[in-house]
Length: 121
Length: 110
Image (cartoon, rainbow over all chains, first blue to last red; front, side):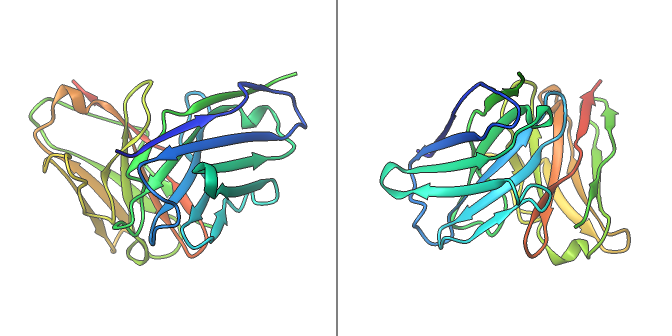
């Protein structure tokens, strides 16, 4: 059974760095074709794709955020970590991580429950 | 970069068929797969269509996906509407380096 759980701070001050962890089970990110993505959703607004980390180490970032985003994989802990620097109020929202099955070329088959982050002083 | 444009809202009666469109601003809609996600209030999104027209296991065949190159758009068709289909629906596609979500469509089942 595949599960993903996002965790991190619920409140972050402007200009700080937000670090979120996606802890997963039921799959290996080293398995061919697997990927983990990060998506966020401001309150009452649409989904926004942030980043994708693939089984072969390939990393892709949203062009509008690529200078502020870093995604990494902790192999031993089965975790994917997302860091977003210099946060602002517009970065407030629910952050989801999601799994792309190896048989899929695109899309996310399993999503975490999301974690709500508020940026405020 | 490109944008995916969806209607803000659609509504239809139970038992009827609804089509939600997703128009790509630049680049061919046929060049990359399109996914569709359903999100009920307070819940995480779930995939109803991946790779343009594939249904994950467990998704009823009332849900189908297609593209129309003439309008550079993708469509999600839901037939035999049920009250539980009421949700927000998002399309998503990609280019060589990035992925993009549409702005979402609120489906109301009257």
